[in-house]
Length: 252
Image 1: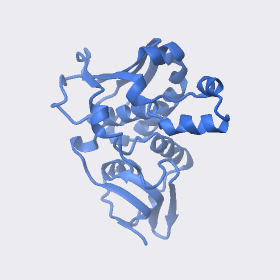
Image 2: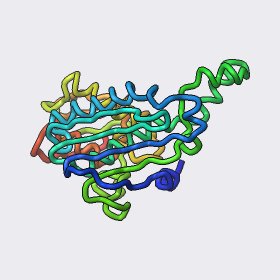
Image 3: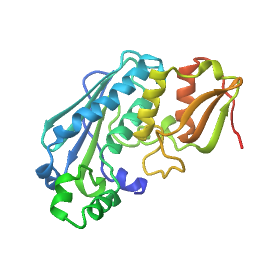
Image 4: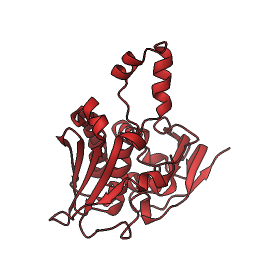
């Protein structure tokens, strides 16, 4: 799906009362809401945002005290409320990616299930839990203090503009072995990566997000089989080693 198809779903709601708050509301189509109540997606998405909160506690994006709450105020509405000091726009970019990814299943997934069930459409429809973003999501609205239109900032890219992507069999971060993430931090990073937090929506990765590996190699930190936005990689490395410049290169 192209970026334009995501842009077409996006709208801007009235700003929240507080400067340190934001809200994302996804509205499902009537047909999708009739099949599945929005509440069914709340727990899994909350778990994902809990990983974002955990990284924020470690200094990701320079946030402090991030609170992220996922709810379903109606059968066709999924809502994410965010609060942090400061509340960087890059946080909204990451959060929007997570909300979209949770509701953007490949239509081919349903066909694979149908084939596995020997064409039993009724059973396949009952068993399939995915969402076709283009057909079953009616709107995604953002509510951000000081922002009333898409011209205020780019909600799809870190740093407010498209930047380079890294698709690499192996990336070496020079002299960063001491900053290897601990097991819990790595788990949170990989969970968010698997939900496409670190790639712009619509990008087709060369390596499956969430399946990359972090490990030390000599003095260096290795990221193995990774597809990632360069700005996201910078944000991760800045969390692992605050205030330190990083040299990243591909290793053949």
